Image (cartoon, rainbow, N blue to C red; front, side):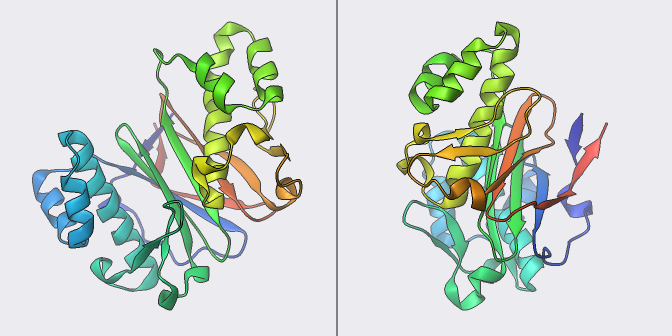
Length: 249
């Protein structure tokens, strides 16, 4: 089982080395005082966008997620968190603005439930997905819509007791890849296949639209707290994962 360390207590790292991915697991829970401090490091536009969310917990999580991201990026770059300039790609993927050498540090983040997961890599695109496992989720319609035919066949051939965990393995691997490419679900998720069998390592197996993609992208499962599932995709062969804030209990 994994639990996250307190973000203020963790050692702030140097930039990732080549072929290395840093993964930071952070709790989203914070005091009102900490929330106000995080509001001070995000931009007025980011704060306004968060404040437009109608659900108070989601509004709070949006502020905390962006504030923690800025704190982490600022530590990597030696910049004040509020001075880190961020831009969005065509489909919403965040990246550093060009004059801050975006190729030097790529990043992606995902939050679910009580946790935030941030992945960083040097000079290569990276995507990450964290999902809270829901026992009430009707996963079959989602698999039929978003999974490749081979993935559906493998999933529904499994013992029913193992299908839910296999669904989440497949989903997080697919979404991590989609987020890594920057296309998100604008790219049809059923055109590519990832592994999902319990004994199969995470991998991008085939892609109808981009046959060369499996040679350029690596998938890895990420240790996650009980009740969660996570994966990372990185545009490099044989990545080394370095974990920050992951503590066994």
